[in-house]
Image (cartoon, rainbow, N blue to C red; front, side, top):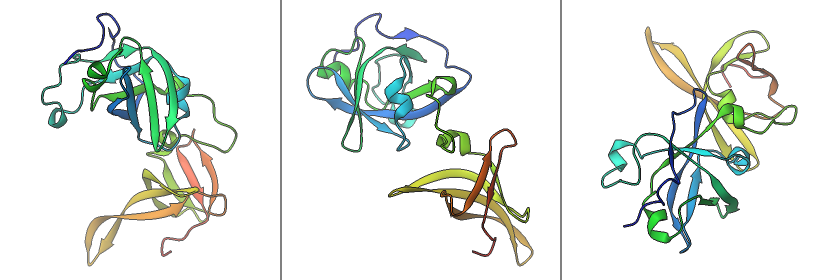
Length: 199
């Protein structure tokens, strides 16, 4: 199995503000393109940015992986949407065997490289970890995930509740739409919602 061309991948420290945005699923075609599985429906940062920072698959998926070690930076020649993900041509990856050697590789970008968003739009990574309170100031939980449900996204919150004197972790979901979200204050790390704890 061939690997990417020598010198195409440059050993590089992972940026301090790096965000994992997806992974390489497999080869696509015979000319070295790879199929990307993005972690979010918003792929604008992956499309707009080069270089990408790559890390090997997690240990449980890395059996036989030998394309590179540590973190590397690689230029992106071209990237475009395809079905439910993206396909990309990476510098130095010129044939199907070299592309197949990258299966499972994790793709990172520095948060500072993301394109600016229009007013009122946010990257999912900027919402994870924010506290959510309602108009009365009641703490509803902390955002742990966003789930795409057709045209809208849903905030997944984790909170602690006491049941029969025992504290336990629970989840609640709030649609991330203007009808329920009053505002996002990234500086204060808080989202205000028109939502009640018993909904």
